[in-house]
Image 1: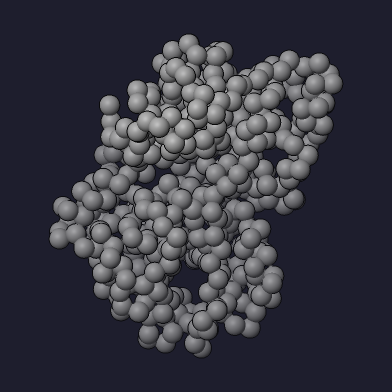
Image 2 (image 1 turned 60 degrees about the horizontal axis):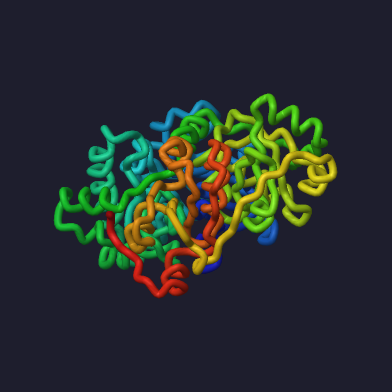
Length: 454
């Protein structure tokens, strides 16, 4: 059997920055590689192609999403995963050098530790000829996935393992396709860029890590690109080792009347407002956390909220429950009590208390500014004298923000809305949000931005 040019279909999650892959094996059968718990896109792709997933492979114990292999196994797929991962559910435990016969194509298992200890890459061969390699979080386009997820005491050790793994992969023929899981937008990887796949030849020639002269230079380059990552990364690998709970019914939002919502909030639940910035600013439940629904919704949900705390969703009628619940389930947030029935109109009608947040345009910025972007964004250009706290660090540092009027800013306003809601929940009362970013302020004010650190 030979692989056709359209036999491999990437299924990209732009929010988390990852790619799953669906490989058409012929005769209506398919291999899925690194499928997420949210299988909607992958299953829709398989259905369009008339495919049934018979193998589901994980390259590693994912920290940034829950695996979908257990869900696929419930529908008859055989799970392929590392023996070193010690998963507690039924799977074909693979070791370096093992081969899996796909009835014409062959998957050869390559141990490629670094991103995680038990990481595997899957080399796809047509007879003896390498076709492509599923590299997961080992070799990615222009870089390699981060090696600090197991703690600072392991970071350099794993970076050196990553060096050996990348050079093992780089020894494959130049024409071998590189199919990574992590890509642009993933907090498991560093570089930006539109390309999510590559070839061994291209990576050998252009990847800065593969052009490093030795292991020491490789480690220095890799670690220099590592920033912060979401708090939920610390939880998911173990959940994936045990296997996520199966989802047997389409998730739904239970409607909750105003009285029930008040009771839940009094008992410790959190109101999660997913409406657009302008709607939240115009009026929201006091103490609500605002995470506007968009591609990055799951990232900030997992970074900022405790999965054990029940959530009460506040949404607009045109925001679909599935677009809220599936991203949450994909990162292990199953504890959703329901939604405020009727949304904010129902809350207003019941004369519930309402908080508002002031929005300011770039030309209206006056007074202290809190920049909550990532470190790299801040260093690339910020307002003079702006205070900087990354959004992910703000819950622990809200008390460090002076309880005086402050304008919160990010790149557009969505993250700033989240930050403002966190500050308001912590007791800050004079918080405004900049609608726009640093470049918008510079254009409106005619003043230059500062770069680097104060």
